[in-house]
Image 1: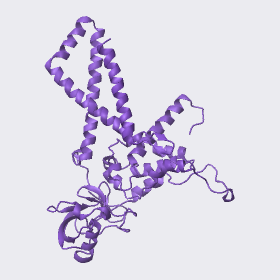
Image 2 (image 1 turned 180 degrees about the horizontal axis):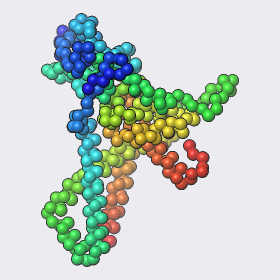
Image 3 (image 1 turned 60 degrees about the vertical axis):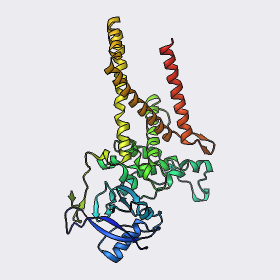
Image 4 (image 1 turned 45 degrees about the vertical axis):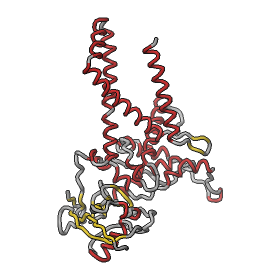
Length: 250
Length: 135
């Protein structure tokens, strides 16, 4: 770390000490390549060992270091201290709209349940035998879903979405994007099963297209587009059922 | 608000303020987009009122046209027009975001989809204006 210093205002929640969160301030040295996660690790190692936060890879892959930095959901491993104004403190808080367990650590169990709900795996009406070979795809078929397969489950999109804040039951951007990814996969046959989950009131129809999920996504997954396309798909299916109730539909 | 769950340490659930939509620029942008839908409704209501006046005869129709010419109605129409234009353009922008146009392995860039939608909108508006003003 360099000789310049910056002030970090870090949210603390320690239920055994105080029933509500409060802020602690720490002055940390930094250089051009120092990120917020480095600063938090410096605080933990050298200033205050009681600070709790999640992190792992430090390279934008694991998705575990997401926090609110100056009110924006960010991966702290990709938020450089030099980006922020020199005079004011950088405010670091746990991801908003999630219950806080301790300091900067949020409870993600509800999010994990939602992911599971959309059955994010390959569903086949009939599995073919291993000897029959792989399920082949053309490059064009891969292109259709590739963008939606880049999710690292960092939960920044949930933290950007005001619908998640108002209705905690909302399935949410990442889960719907993941469902859409499998629905678009030519090897998958689980669209009808997922439609039951996506089509419910707390599924795609809860989304008001604020679009914040897409703007904060560090992997350009574009969950907002996935949700709106799922709405089109659900509406088309509903219309088909109305016009042709006995036919076979996708 | 502190919530205890099944013997575990209490988690803290942060309340969402009523003014959440003022907090960030993207929330404010969303709120304006939603608010301008009121202008779309207002323009539809004025059109319906015009048709209703027409159904009530010449005097009612001309009376309504007279009201539309008043300075208050002109100011109101200008506000409604601004709201409708903003709503339509942002709506088409979002449509371009959702609509995927594939040409083989290539996907048509969003700005070209938007340009196509805007051209179509302007063309249809021009036809309606032509029918309304010159025919």
